[in-house]
Image 1 (cartoon, rainbow, N blue to C red):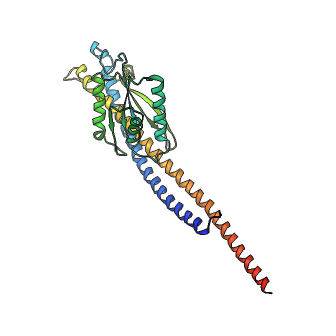
Image 2: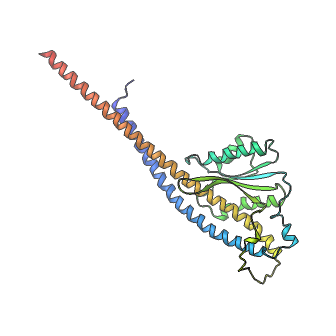
Length: 293
């Protein structure tokens, strides 16, 4: 069935409108990405300072209490928890799919029964995904802003660390997309608790923190280690949000480019149909004139 010129013209107009919308969304995502990247850089400065403070406190001052601190020592694993960071909406390409696919593969491989498996969801997509498969998140957070402050996520972070301290699970991992650049992200599964990558030997031998402490080092570590774990989880959330904004920008750019290709193809189709219609009209006129002779 031949498509009329008006139908093609309407399709071109509709596609142009869609292209304008996706182009605007691309620019919004690009602005969000710039802010997210700056927030991630600022956090890295903070994280490096806190890490240095901890390693300096631990360097050369390990006690039996420090060595056996529950935040630093692995214990027999009866249950593992995963913080899964996804978006609250679609239009982000394959951003969510890669995380959720990896999580289900890990569950099938390491937690086939599901009895030793818990999920904590940040983002509506992940929470709805697990609920649809009969996996109830022990905690979830929806509607997170594109540049979340620590105050906005502190409740879920503090609750997670508290659950670990109370022995509700024995390991905590964070699963998210790490932002590499605007074109690339990497799926990461990082262990947050217990803290196993804090090496006192990282401390600078030429500079060791030398302060007069009102409380003992052990008492300070009791306060500082949970805060360090919370900050690392917060850093993963910022990183994931940066990757999400980059994915949204690229998805909208792809959609805009595809719309332009469709417009070009429809324009060619329109011109050919119009040319054919004109040729048909000329043929009919010539035939009519010949019949009158």
